[in-house]
Length: 138
Ligand code: THU
Image 1: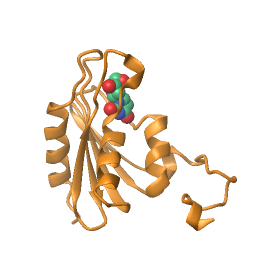
Image 2: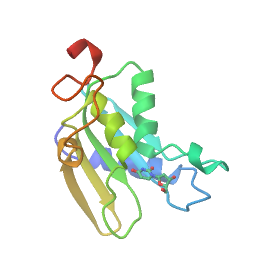
Image 3: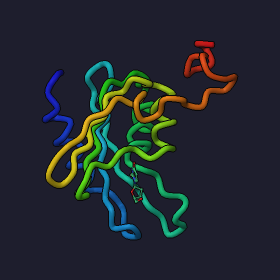
Image 4: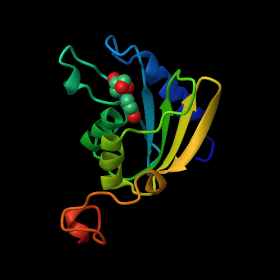
């Protein structure tokens, strides 16, 4: 699947269901798996602010729970004035499974595109750089 329209629509739908009463900043994500499945995620905040989970990690956790570990693309959907790139924690989590993930950030009035390896060129890996992301790849 080459066009991004379906992923954008799924991410927009997830954004509308985000639970963000504290920041007021709703984020939706649509994570495309290698088999074509699209898994959605939204940020879920909490009265104990630090427990918040971002939309990207929410989608990733759902996908892995569903038995999927290979990912091609993710769309992040917000109503911000400019592009929102995944936070550092989400970059690291996504990198575990998809270091070359394509990322499209859709915001109010435009979009931006990156590859995860551009945003996180030196991810943490147990054992040091040069090893695979997963223990079995070392
Ligand atoms: N947030 C995401 O969902 N994804 C990001 O990449 C950055 C931030 C959420 C977390 C919090 O609920 C709100 O945006 C404001 O930081």
